[in-house]
Image (tube, rainbow, N blue to C red; front, top):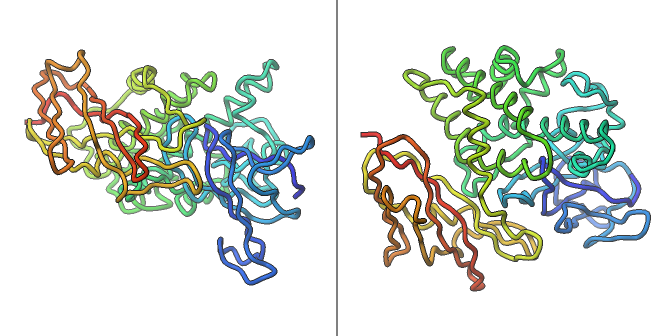
Length: 388
């Protein structure tokens, strides 16, 4: 591996840290001199290392084929992703380069590229290529990355920081790829993947089939909706705020829950098109959108940490400071003022009241402040009609 430019990506570029396993023991962050594991960071475009004209991020990666692991936030949304470990020799760190090894050609997932091409293929940059073939490949590989996130996401629900961890959470897909092709838009293929790892392995058949159908339809919707870089963020928002909570609900019980159609999911993507993009290019603190779970009561008091648990600091070591962030203001936009109210309490919690008549999704804005006094704004989404 030469000291060239790399990119970390999970669909959108990933801003964060990289650890190289210099001593080769597959444990990242340890070592004994002179073989200490090597760390560096990306720039704000998810790039790290030096390229042919000498551009350099924090440190130049070492030469040689070392395993490396990336963790960080999506440049487009601020959501946190961890433990992306590409196959040795990959210049692009992404979900796709995690699950596809030299003996698993991309044709197994419907991509007409060799593994040697994929490992160095910057799909995000390709989305704006003037060459139609390159642009189409960029869409295919970016779509694959986003489809892989749902598989890691349903196994990462409930983490303290809202992070989606890739390592160990895409093993079912790897096993299926070792056996043969995988169709991410096929319910039968997704059911086979689910049966390889928990919670799908232990789920009852109706629940596993319902989740498989939803995941397959999400794949179809991604293929229909994804065009350029600007369409990645709405997919990410819908995945985090609506799709993954629905997957969790289906695993609990599929009985009585209407099945989402491909059109429903595409409309979910479109709903988030007006979401303001976070200033990940220059800001040192970014508030990240949240979902308030579906409570039965029309009035509910939500702890302040529910809004700030995934808000991220970008300068220095990218990460979440759960204890250092506070909600300092809330605002309900005019379009929801007749169905929703939100009030900040003295203890930092937020009292939310709802009286909507239709099962639609609304939101209010909140300001968060970190321990350094930096303030960032985001949205908290909530069902406007209660369940009772």
